[in-house]
Length: 441
Image (cartoon, rainbow, N blue to C red; front, top):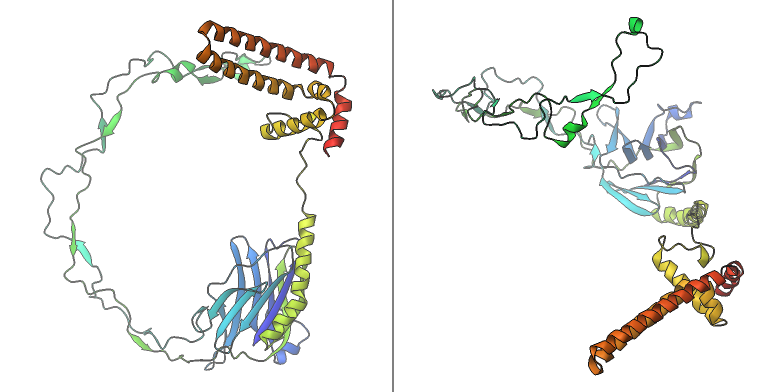
């Protein structure tokens, strides 16, 4: 048996609702004009999502062979439903060996035994509690009791309080006893329309005393309470094993008069139609491509020809419909801010400098002076290091100091030239920005 392959398409994503496929029992009631919730069914299968509930229902309406009454058997640990805005394929396979398999989009998510994993069980227990059996009045089911021979010690003081005043406590040195905990709001003023006769005496709003926040406390000081080391509480006798204990009482077992054994619950009753039971406040809950049959291979082939053709297209359309993140990249290197992205700032500035320098080095220095100044500073720093090393090896200390002074002067000159380049190239920044943007694109 292979009931059913169910495709559930929801444009808005199911938030709260149920969408069940019902395989209706083939009997006289099936041919009535109205289909309702009470219409007899054999299998109910489909997603249920609302609040903390999220599962794929599988319910088999099983007939008691002794009484002829029907009872719903629910899958105990149902898998979660797959909630998406695309078509989702729900597949149920019930094998003759009493195994039920649930697949979502062709992937197995649950395998259950009809004889072990449904509540209530398809087969009732062989024995049940005797409803006429009652616990004897003298039955002792208390395993522990208070020791009857125990007595309260003479020095046990039940009246001792849990806490006592700490007599050793002393007032902190910074405690301000003469300062109130709250003071009137300094800027509080009586409203102009305040009438003392009608409104009473005006009392300004109070605020916490700011002086109290800087010290241990204000106002009248009282010694704090501490746990009483003599406190013992109410005395109770210790527990011991109950010598009269007989164990936990349970009624005797008798044979279950309603016992039966259905070894093949997978042999479902004949079905004459399918129906949908839908409860939701949302729109666009759609079903298509329903397959019910006995061949798993035919069901898989049908899914390949329908669902697995449509699903990738829907996924691509959903991805394309998602709002793209706003493009925050600057339009040109001149729009960059160092603190926003230091690495990108340095990279773009260097690329722009060397691009312009290939055709006009002077223009590169004028338009990107920060790079020119940085390169000059690096060169000067290297010269300082080299001269210092040479001077320490082959020249006396005064010569090294002179070389360092010369290098420092050169660095200052390079910095001045870079600043001058900024001023002279300011008027050409707009045109150069456009040229550089096109050359680097």
